[in-house]
Image 1 (cartoon, rainbow, N blue to C red):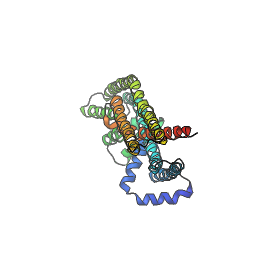
Image 2 (image 1 turned 90 degrees about the vertical axis):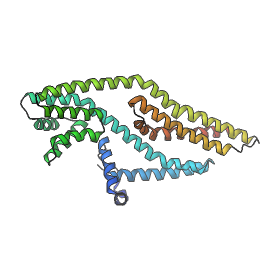
Image 3 (image 1 turned 180 degrees about the vertical axis):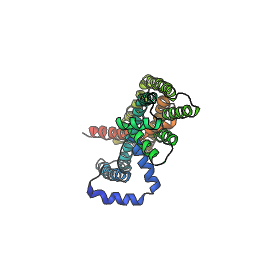
Image 4 (image 1 turned 60 degrees about the vertical axis):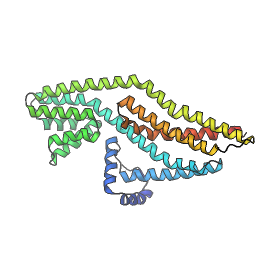
Length: 309
């Protein structure tokens, strides 16, 4: 699937040759996990061109309104930040969709096992006649098994590849039940019900903390940038009345730093509230920081233009 016009293909080839293969493979794996079946170098090329174009526009706008040229850097940062946030969002949504469909998949496997079908054959049969992101992963596992990878490794790699603790725990329980002997269909049925209960608790937890998350988002990208932007405008207005303020430049830098730090802290808190992990909250910073800083700049530009009328 092509994401760039053919005229940009030479640039994509240069990017493909310039970036180390290890880095490209890692990005490609991330794109596959998010469900974006595109070439990594093509997406990097598109993001790079967009970043340069928006950066130039930001510098021009900054010069027109007499702002600090450093604001033009925001244009270079926003496209890759938004793209990274979008990819993380797609990954979370895809993993969630896979987790939600896994209990039904396990029940189908259990039914086929009771009918006398082998586990590998049951997996291949379900992968052939299903749809959705889970079946894409199952088809990949089936192909890996056919080219020589063991069944256990192919199944366990699904959880590792998707970075899902629920799926990794589920597949490991099935592998342990298979090694222990006994009725594997009953084991899979029990694991499916256990996973369904875990996912129900996860949905309930998200619903309960959504108000707290919305409060953090509003505080990070609306309240703080708007308040600090208006304070900077008021300080600039006082200076136009003849009362010089030697700390105006430093206050703008301090306000910008505060907004960035505030957005980072809000992102970490969102990760703790939603997932119980501060590390998972870092991904929200790719969206909150540019959004908050962008609103801060827009408020300053808009308010100063109104005052100049």
